[in-house]
Image (tube, rainbow, N blue to C red; front, side, top):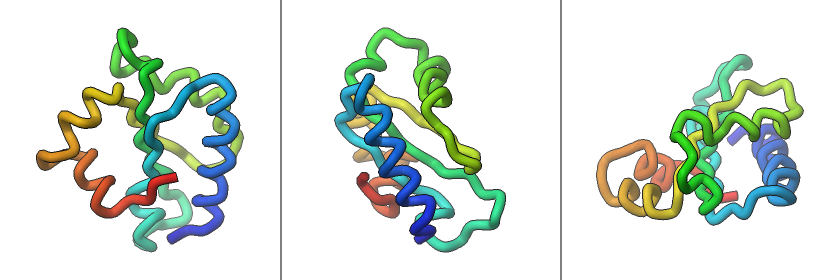
Length: 103
């Protein structure tokens, strides 16, 4: 695991929790499996009730305002119901749960 990236994610979580109640945050992808390149992004699944009623593609937009690192990042944002629907079937959620790190 890229420990520097992990610490970055932990700090990011502290920052966004000031404005967003987070049920689940999972750090996953190449940076958690040591199969990353210098330009690899950080992949995050974020689960919150605050995403309810917000278009799927708009949910992460405000999060970029809090992302103050040099790492590229992908935010994948779900409501708790959407997350629960996907965790038991083959999906990015089940992959993240199997191989990612809960923060």
